[in-house]
Length: 342
Image 1: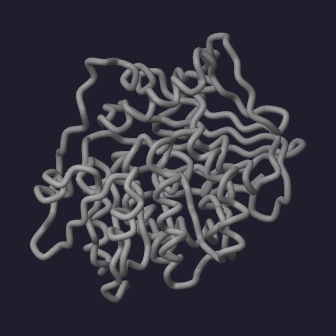
Image 2 (image 1 turned 90 degrees about the vertical axis):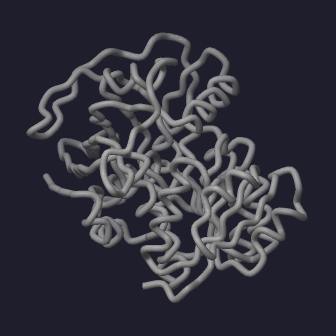
């Protein structure tokens, strides 16, 4: 349990940011609320919480926002805009940086531009410590077990719906703009841009979900996190058709709270399969609300970083930074995980 350490949350008034603030409080941390809009910060702040407005284009304001905190969590997209300035500020402050970015290009930029500097500074930077990117990486790493390499990894997202937040829409727009009309796949050990339509497939999800229609090569942040530390030349991600339709539908509603924790009724099943030769291993996670479950993921990461339970310094994905099986076990109140071997 945390002992009153202060943790800055940038984008604290956003949908995911609010879940992260609540989780920090529940775990005994003291959240410091930051972001671009002072009015929204004040409205989101609970009694006694410190509010520190800052724009990412104002280095001095970011330095003030991070003064005296033990770590910073970036929940504010588009991360193509916010990640680099906040990482720079974290490096100046000498504190760990963790974000919840699902943007493929932003996560790639973090590895490209900060790996050497973070390692030299002894800093811990963990991008994509969220449902997309982080959870899949932990599951794939746990499924690999004692394997040092695999031929392919498949991550199938069985969402019953996906009502996107404003942040998800904004981040998606930035990613689409950066890649033009292309889509991204990870094949032959590298990212490739393609201009054809993604395949329509069926994925045999574990019971009780069963076979479902999916969009193949519905590429998510896992194509950055897994290859950053796992020797797997082919990484594929899939999304249930109904969820894929929701997220691009301009009329799809935002997530609506349905319980006392503010979670929506959305459910998920993440099915991860890794194959090597004729062998196959699998890890499956089940839970509720992809935005809400990001909070225990990122706060558990912060706790482990601040208590020295990481595998060295530098830029690292969830599976590289932490003991994957132990981390997943710590999430048992939020995510049900099953791992099976050959």
